[in-house]
Image (cartoon, rainbow, N blue to C red; front, side, top):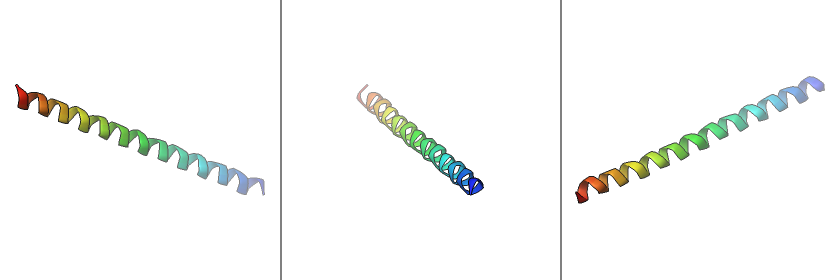
Length: 46
């Protein structure tokens, strides 16, 4: 029983780490897109 509980905890921890990494990646991509658009607009205006 204790083993199953430990496994479940490990799996949920792993999933939370993965979801955190995915959200961090998505945020970084969003930031890169915004920065890219900003620089593009800047070069277009100048």
